[in-house]
Each structure stands twice: as C-alpha cells, then as structure tokens.
Image 1: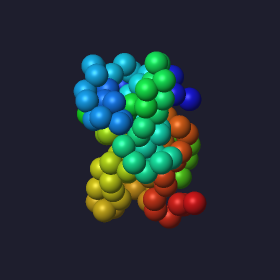
Image 2: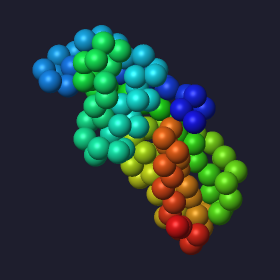
Image 3: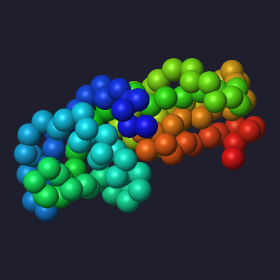
Image 4: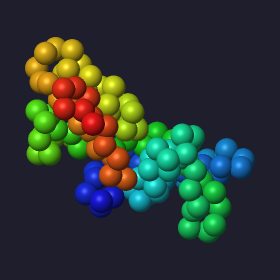
Length: 118
C-alpha cells in the first residue's frame, strides 16, 4: 500500500530522544513517520536504519481521496497527516458539491464523512 503514495516533500529526520536533526529524511522514512503518527497519536516515532528511534517533521504526502459513495480514486490532496487531509476536504462537503467524501492514508486507514460514512 505504501508504495502507491507520492511523497511531495520528505522533511527532516530527527532523533526522537534528543530532538536533533540528523539529515533530510528519505521518502520511505517520511511515509513510515506519517503511518506511525496515525497509530501512536504522537510525532510518528519509528526505528531507523541503525536502530535509533526517529521521527520526521515537514513531510508532505499526496493522500488519495474520492467522493460520491464509491471507491473510485478521484485525486490526491497534499497534507502532512490524514487528519489534515480530511479537514481540507471538508470544504467540498460544506459547499454542497458532494454527499460523501473519503480520504485514505498510506497505512490503508480511511476516514469517511457524509451520508454514506461508516
């Protein structure tokens, strides 16, 4: 699932314990941190290549979204988290354009809003 997502901006890789910026993060590290943040509700800490616990700041991913109660992918929206992408799509709902919108993260987690929300 992760390989289907476009990392727009990789951000910076940080040491979780010290907060020190280590270097620019890779695309894989950016996705790993975004997925970890979804599950732990924190900064998105994960075990780096050398075993150091790390996290990424400033990473932007193009999250997939759709609308109208179908699973058809309608586009992407650039955001730093699934929650941020979800909030940005709410404008489509309030404008009365569509009845249901979903946005999906690299982990496979999907948030749905509207008439057909789960």
